[in-house]
Image (tube, rainbow, N blue to C red; front, side):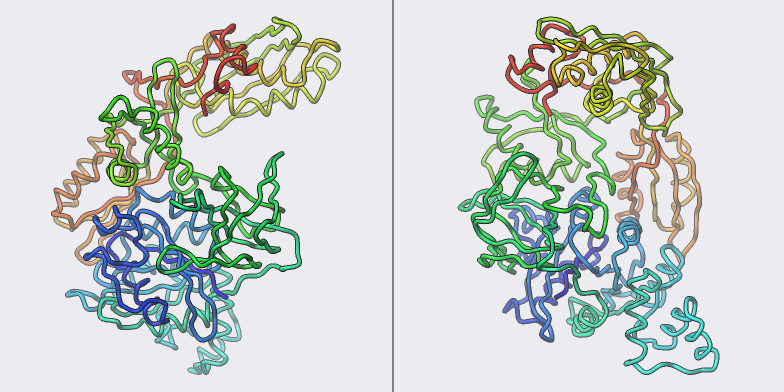
Length: 635
């Protein structure tokens, strides 16, 4: 068995490669085309109309007796959250690179993510039929920008040279002019790939059906099979979710250990959920009823209701890599959503809740007081797709407000926060916090200097565990960071303290301190990877300076200038469209958060608060005690 995912910069031909793999393996009868909206792995209406992948999709096929699970991922950077979640499931990857353009901005982000996740990767230099295509030049761009350990598999001498960098025996034979036969060379290539020491490449044209058979053989020969034991303890991760019109919500899982079957009861938190159906991936998207999921397999489970994406079922220590949300790219803009028909506001929120269940980084929020619905998104393309999805999938036309940049807050000066949560009985939680700002990038630090006689250790742990919730919204509505909070005083009561009183009280003490000390804004600084024709390089560098940015490096590769720059997000996010217009579509830029720095003094943005403000003590306590509808914060 092989579990693989395929990645590429947008328009590098990734979906066409996926189609050819399925066709050659006999999983489909005819080749789908992206430009005609018939690609089998583009299953959403919006994907077929626009000719781009929006969601990751899976298909199962066989080659040379091996079962292969293929995950096709989106190429556009606005859907990086889908790409990130796809990294949780595979054991190997294919990185498609255009032989005409070489390494492009998103290619770099993808390779970095694959490398950090330690996923062995095959390269496929596609579009060799294009005018100006050059596999040697594309390989050179990979070696210069991404890793010196790239090579062409067809060139056995270059493979030997690459292996010799890490193996003295290979080096000795290579210097003697010996080239190992394939039966000796390929196991060494596979071993080096698993150590992330080698990235062998193949080339061809998916459009012209060239190089596909060789790619399939390389998948079987060089990418690793899954490990784990079927008789071992359960370990699975939920990496995607979707809504089926008949079966309801299904969650896609990768099983790393153990086995699952219909009617199994899956524990989650303090609840238990029963699996009603298990389906394996299929090229038509409907899935194949299996009834059982074995160790190493990928499948869709039904009956688990609202199990969140990112949930680990069973023993988390058996995962081969860390599971996190937003590590690859996080949403930096917030918008208000409004239905075209005001009477459909409730239905709109329900539809957006379904979509946020499929994409947790949407972070839907509803303010009951103002009746405003807001969500976070990746960018312009993401919002356009959301708007179209709401109209076509749910028949709920809606509009989004002008995007607002998401800042963070930090404390302006050292201060103290205090709360005496003693009414209405039964309750008792008194605490003093000393709060001080830290340099940007320091995060949140907590320390306690209180004796367990005054506040029991279990309550002190509650204070620390409640801080992420307490700091979720500061005085201006943004997340609070770069702060040290020290518990310096307070007490509990042997009779009146309820087990969760310090959890309820912590946000009140924190907000009291933020009110006393005041907060200032931190703006996101993006690391931008820019590629443009050489002739406009000077103009782009000038623009970077005007945007309060800094060019870190620049490199001329042929007729293309590649540069890295640090640019405040408020200026960088809209610059992508400017770049496309300036270069006639030949320039590109991808970004990721590099750091958070103090915003200019004239920036005074706020984000509407969701839920009850802990400074509104009476109302907040009622909400915290579930006497009001909803949670302490509407998460």
